[in-house]
Image 1 (cartoon, rainbow, N blue to C red):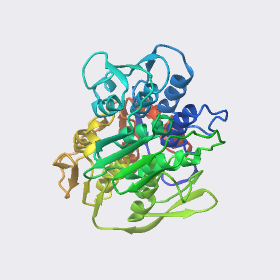
Image 2: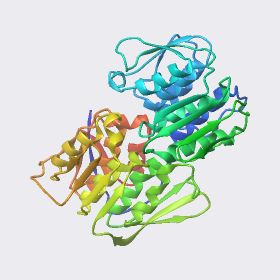
Image 3: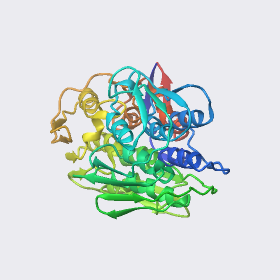
Length: 408
């Protein structure tokens, strides 16, 4: 399937964003570990959350989480402490995404996990059991989802858990998000120093919980305002004092001419007309925003150097390679350095006449490139349905804002 996206002359709209899938999936796991009687409210209506709900409610022996990396990691830990034997699998791409670091950590704690096919990769056969070991050491530069998965099961372990992180710690805000949600459900979990996390054995409390809107999804509307000649977008359900690390999008986009007005758990985005001449930023704590800013800066003709991107290589696709390939179709030559840096110094090449963006089974490729039609006559997006992973209504919301979207 391929669609053509054409931009309106001006944008003035209110968009109800999807709920945060990061918060939704953590709240679901925590609620299940606590045998909660309250069901989290305003859950994300996306693939990642739907497969999580299904996995927690179904009694089937095999769990297919499709392309949901968050579900794969969180459920691997959850199933390790839950009675019964289950097999967890996913798409072909999911079966190529490494999980050995998490499996090794859980095995060290005493978990019973077997690789069904290839060592180091899903599918996994997991038999739940009591885990008694109470300390573990992990490199700080592994996916924060591995650390969050271990943290969430920590209170139900016989002796609790202390996690020591070595070296540089990436995506610390996502670890803090997990700690804050655990605290919301009655568990004390905290940093004891810059590299050590400690959770005593204790019980989660069943509590009413409301999920806020997704700041990652908001990033595409910031991008739309930045690339528009005239735009104002209202986004209800976003909290100024958000748990989400991607709420930093507001401060970064201020450098690109977008002002954020906070009003009663709502943000209003307006152009302020003031952009920097160059943007250098370390995305170590907000890697999911990288695609948005790569595309936006290039289209605004703002050179950039973005570091801290090493985790992009193990996402839904190798996002660094995908960005280099697809931006070249639009006439921009990006450079990768050391597997962690993407930069653009203004180098251009011939733009394809009718550029069609491949999405690589990656929702963020589709959503980050669709707004390029604001700077180009039009853009074609291949396999646009991938947005269902995190933002199922993305195309409908673009139409509501005045974009023309046609299947071609």
